[in-house]
Length: 258
Length: 266
Image 1: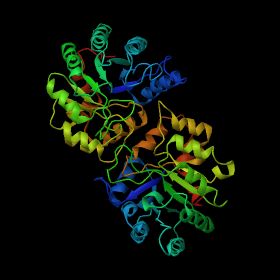
Image 2: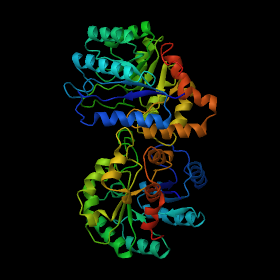
Image 3: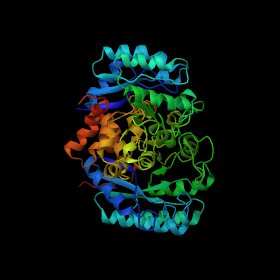
Image 4: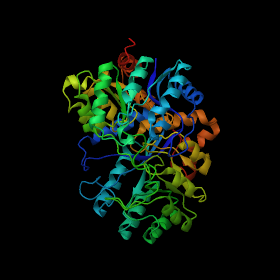
């Protein structure tokens, strides 16, 4: 089984991206043998209230058994706690926040409160380091990348905080993992969408130094080709068990589905 | 057949202590992907004794010599570009001639001098005489100068290409950072500029836009520093294109732009 933990629906504000509809996402998943995807609402990233995209996202996913919704929570807006609780009551198993896109300090009071609230509810919090290569972004697309220090801060906020970080490169992962206690590091998972394969072999090195238990299949589709993380895995000498951990077992465990 | 037009090898005189492991990893991954030929260049001592993008003449000579040794070690897998620093014109021309007689098949211009600078003209004339394509390192839409390199973008490369219509220029790593949409708008109208698909960028829609801008007839497959993304793009193209069109990108275009008999049948 393959689960892509990093997929989205809807248009991107900064350039034309094909394949943003639900049917196109399904087709891309079929093309690459991906059985299920964790999906967020891409346009909401740039909305003043990204939570306005949540009802649509949850509704779409209720009709798409292969999609798991990852609604957005903006902890700088009034009454965000009610949104989080409502999503939780509706059966949502993971939420996301992109503080630099919301104009929030990534490790500021609002984000720390959100981390604690998700810990209280027992659901993980997803954050992206970036969405595009910084060298190609639109001149008006000036949101900072998520800093590694923020991840370290948030995971220390409560012993029940669990974080899923997407689009991180090897340097970022190394810094957070080895800058955390083993107990903290066990509560952070990384997708492999931005981790280089050969000849630099960043992914192979991380799997050797950190172990496959912390890594998830993630693509960033449709902004990025979903073929990429699979090509990355195909170029490794992985045991069937390790590959299954990365492709699905770790993700299922995060959502309590094993 | 599959030809990778954008490859680099490391060596003992570079700052990387893991240079052998990286080279071996490249060869191993090439085998897995099914790459038939890798066309490689070495940028001096990779910053050890002179800057990567401004290599000294001594480092250029050393790098080209090592490149020839790598070709000799892998005679059925690797071919080489001659690297030059255009600021040292006489040395650059000498290296080109030495490279030609040593079996090199192309010219690599990195970022020692802006692509539209007149200093590049005698090198392009020499490339034309030798039938070499010119692989030009590109920053897709250079909005400013960056430390450590005198980078060029597609607009600057196309100025050079228009001055040398008999030379084929390869716009390096369309996925290698920067605004590739900007580059594609420019190269559309310049028929002697080919687009190399290498780079870590795997943006959705990028390959369709490449096909729309220059057609399959001016696309070249490559990897540069990330072979995994090269494989991903190849797999996507396999779903997008028929075999004959795909073969243009896999190898036929490369066969047509490098000197005859550069890639003998294995």
